[in-house]
Image (cartoon, one colour):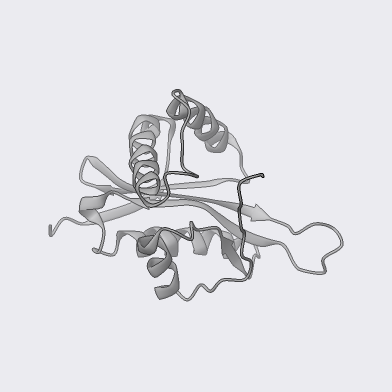
Length: 160
């Protein structure tokens, strides 16, 4: 696949393609962790409404990776702050980053992240955070290769 990939801002015209990529990402997550990643029957429509809101919210950054006429990945991020008692500076938060399975390992994720990081840093945010499923070895390896390291561990247990 010698096709060139271009990263650009998402538009409303990208809605269905980004939704397809999100659903592919959720299906992969469900394979890794079927307990946590259970979706409602109308999950895609709910998420598309969220995407619509993000596309018009100036705080949100929504990027897509395009290879010719096909979207092959997307990334989303926003500024974030810790609760008021913490003396930490505002930071960027990656809310989503996904690359279609057949495009993984070709640098698309790195391109998306680099573009997202540039936009967050242009807003004066000097740290970037994210959440990744503990049971997703693909994304955890990707983020570690980019220099991310764990700083909080969330745990779960069924109620007794």
